[in-house]
Image (cartoon, rainbow, N blue to C red; front, side, top):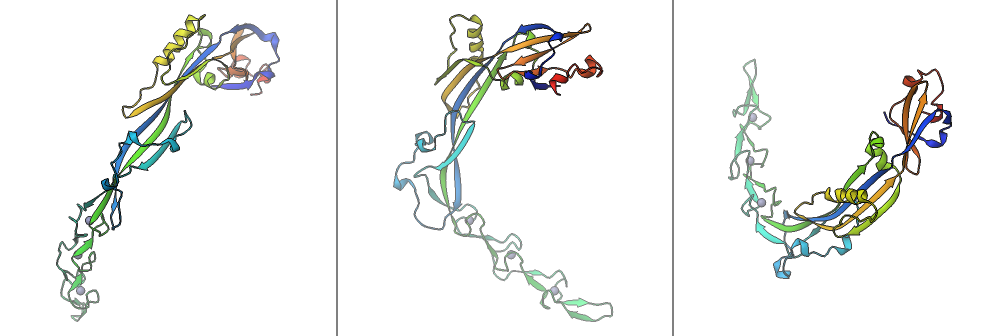
Length: 305
Ligand SMILES: [Zn+2]
Ligand SMILES: [Zn+2]
Ligand SMILES: [Zn+2]
C-alpha cells in the first residue's frame, strides 16, 4: 500500500530512532525523432486537371520541406499528412476495366430485361387457394417474373470503386510523425531501494546536468566516478530508433532527489518511512496503525490518513 502525506504534519519526535540520508539519482534520456512514410491514396476521377509529372518532378518524402509544420522539440507526439506534389496519376479502374459499370452480381447477366422468377407464385402468375380458385399474383402482376432487385433488370450496376467514372486518381501522401522516446533510470541506495521508482519520478529534485545534442554522450563529473558511470548507463539504455526514422536531437538530465529515511521505534518494535524531494512528501510502505498499535493509540494521527 502506498501512503503519501505532507511531512509538516509530523509532530511526534519522541518516537524517532534513526535519521539517515539516502539520496536517489534519477537519470533521463529523451530521443526526439521524425519518422516519414508514404502511402498511396486513391479516389474516383471525374475529370479536371491533375498535379502529375507534367507539372514537375515528384519529390522523395525526405525532400519535402516541413518547416512550417515542425513541432516544439520533444513533444510527445505529433502527426501530419501532406500530399506529395506532382505525384498524381490517372489509371483505368481495375474494378470495371474502365467501363464504369459491372455485371449485376444478383442476376449475373449483362443483358437488359433480365427477369427473375417470382417466388410468390413460382412463376405461374396465379396464387392457388384452398377452395380451388386462383387469383392473380400481386407481386408480379400475373407476369410470373419480376425485375432484378439489384439492377432493376438493366443487367449492369454502377462500379463502386470509381463511382461509375471508369477512372481512378492516385497520389502519394507522406505521413510524418514526430515522437519523443524516453528512458529513465533510478539509482537508489540500499536503504531507499524498497521505495517504488514512481515515487522518485514524481518528486522534485536538483538538476545536476542537462545537456542537449544531436546525440548525447555521457556527462562528465570531475569528482564523481559514480555519476559518470550512472550517466553512461542511462545513455546506453537509449531507446531503439525505427529504421524509417531519423534522430533530430537528444536531451540528457540527471537529478538528485533528497531522501531521508526515518526509523521510528515504539515498545520494542520499529518501522520506517521516507521523506522525499523538496516537496517533502512522506512515503510509508505499509499502513501501520492496525499492525503497529492495533488502533489503540493515536500514534499516526499526524499522518492524517
Ligand atoms: Zn440484376
Ligand atoms: Zn408472381
Ligand atoms: Zn470502376
